Amino acid sequence: MSEHKKYVLFSYLSIGSNIITGLILFPLIIKNIGFDALGIFGIIFSAKSIIDIGIGWLSGSMTKNLIHYKYLKYDIFTSSIIINVLYGIFAFCVIYLFGFLVHNEYLQSFFYFGLFSVLSFALVPFYEYLRAMLKQYQVAFFRFLQQFLFMVLALSSFVIFKNNSLDIIFLMLLISTIFTSICVGVYYFYHITLHISFKHISKKLFYKLLYKDGVLYFLQGMSTILLFQLDILLIDLLYGSEQVALYLLVWKIPNTLIMLGWRLSEPYQAIIAKEIQIDKKNISTRYFLFEKKLFILSIFVFFAYVLTGEWFMQLWLGVQNTPNINYMYLFPALAVVFSTMQRFYISANYFTFGLNKVVLAQFFELLLKTIFIVFLFDCFGVLAPIIGWLCAYCFTLFIYRKNAQKVFI
Image (cartoon, rainbow, N blue to C red; front, side, top):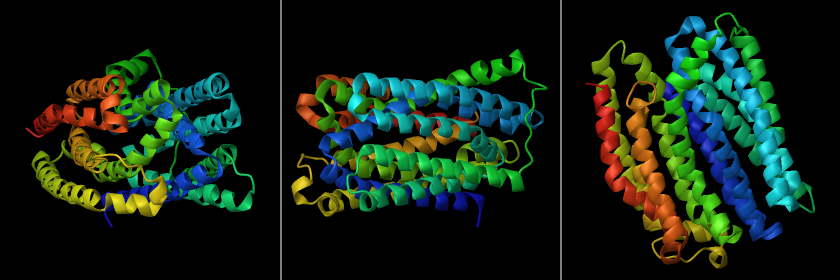
């Protein structure tokens, strides 16, 4: 089995675990803890994603430099360890403070999630190193392991504990991450020789990692995360946590389909960066052949969700809990197609060049999304951010494709 196929397999297993977790956990939270608790559940994860903006971008810069400068690999890894651990501690403080000031009644949940964040950031350098070695399937496996264990523990908690709460759910998330961290450590101990090195760490190295390459990854990471998470925080701020819960229900399945689509193209980020230096014609042919296959697949998913979405939602939530909103299957299905192709085109630019145009296009999408949430929520309800995003895609998707084509010229 090729590395790409292994990556897709474990990525889909991870997404599958995430799907099952959401499909079962959401109704359980509503029934046993309350509709408001579901909104808080989504808000906590969104807050973490917003915090990721401060450091998530650095992973792209680190991986790119690990690919291109092998003699610096230990120094880059060491730098990443220091930065991510320190930022993880900062994230814990921000998350806990947010819970203390805004949602004090769920403070214990914020505490457990803060510890989970520290561990998540500490794992990032190990995943970067594997990606640079094109062992992306190993990263996908460890992510699957963490998600699968969380699924088992979180769902089992509703059977084990009589009085369940968000605190217990987030404790299970922390335990699953601790176990995964141990497994990553064991894998490195037996399979990868890695050293801590300060030999080449200098102002010049940090300038390249944090500024020369880092700024674009920061802006791209910020725009991507805000595109998927700012809507939740804005809806909570302007319209309340119950509207957040409704939005989560409407967007859960389409968002999962988007993540599945993204996993198909993500391996190309590192593959293109390496193989384009060896055989540009071959990688170009493979890339655009895959584009056609991905587009056909996304169209099939579009029609499948439009035709079966209502039936699936009713099966999942029950008829009485299924939202009844006009076009709530059509518009999200279109977003699945556009976002899947967007991510594919970005994969060509991620470790090569042209990321600056990607950033501008994504900020334009974010702007329209925000305008629709703030000014047109009364007209479109929880579909407002999705419709705003679709309007932006009518312009930006052509930019993404043209920008990707330039890499292979």
